[in-house]
Image 1 (tube, rainbow, N blue to C red):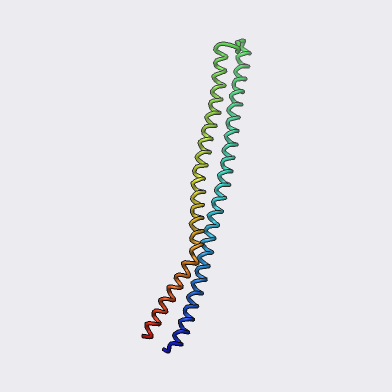
Image 2 (image 1 turned 135 degrees about the vertical axis):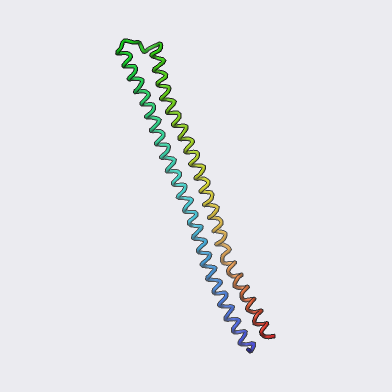
Length: 173
């Protein structure tokens, strides 16, 4: 094969390799960018879900605490009415202590509910922050991969051209 034909074949092959490398690099870059976008979206969704769940827990807890305190006041009022109707004084002594104990028990129940909810909310926030951090780490990873996709593809195209040129030069000798 004459050198001019070989040079033309090399130019055509090199162009084909670079064109293929370019489009492969672009496709890979786009794929990584899409993955990064999904990770960013997942982080936003996780944050919104965590905030919504946190608000739900807080509202339910406030309602249960209020109910416990209301039940306590209702129980104390009912007991006070029963004791008064039987002629006992509820202003001092054992009846007063019993009423105070009942009210304190319902207040303690409300405080336990508040503590339980604080613990749940804290755990929810901690696990949500871990998932958000993982999504952001993944996003950063895919952004880096997208930045390097085109470079990697073009280097591979160049490597193929060097191999093809070496092969052609070997055929001349």
